[in-house]
Image 1 (cartoon, rainbow, N blue to C red):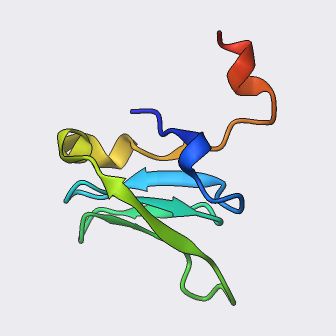
Image 2: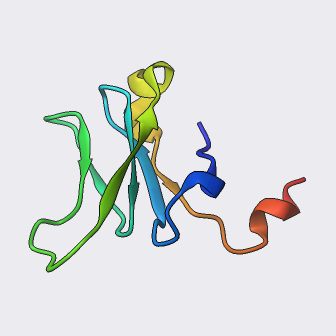
Image 3: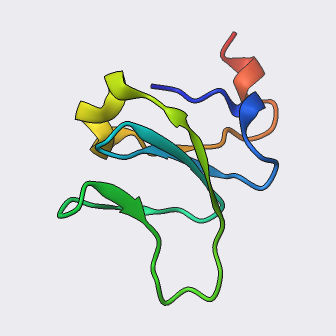
Length: 80
């Protein structure tokens, strides 16, 4: 599933969906924690930001493959 980057906060560089279907925007690349079914950042990091991004129940089963990086500026137009 590709997120709608026009809905993302300006600081968000990453998007994920957890195993419960909840989506999140991230400023730092998270990693999948398969033991708990969610995405996390290195907790030794001084600072990171995340924000809820909606609910995607149809994508929950494939949550481990939901990591998406914000396209480079202009890249999304190149796909058209």
